[in-house]
Image (tube, rainbow, N blue to C red; front, side, top):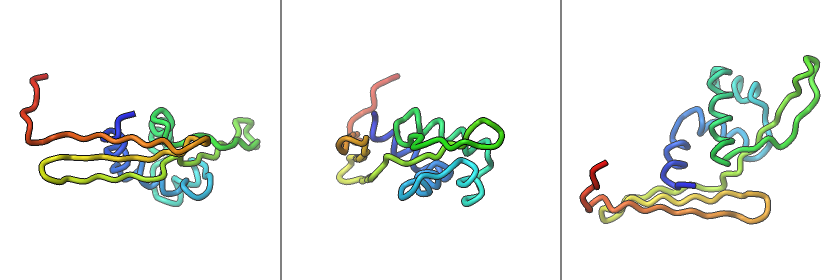
Length: 117
């Protein structure tokens, strides 16, 4: 998991709101959509992206009348820190995977020439 990629994802307004809305208690996509004014399709897309990154998970699924079930999502993200000091961009994240917190850090020296890609 790349700390800078996670920090960029967290800076997305919809993703940030989903993470905020699921940090204390689990919430459904519909609840998050209504609470934060996120279009429902965009809400589901961001939740899937956050799931793929390991930042949210389905805490439980409740039965529903339509038979599809209602998934309640919960954030695993505990903290994100981004700093720029002395020409170095540093991103640090902490994720709780249920066993123990996982920490990742990434540093880019902006003073070094960028390799050709």
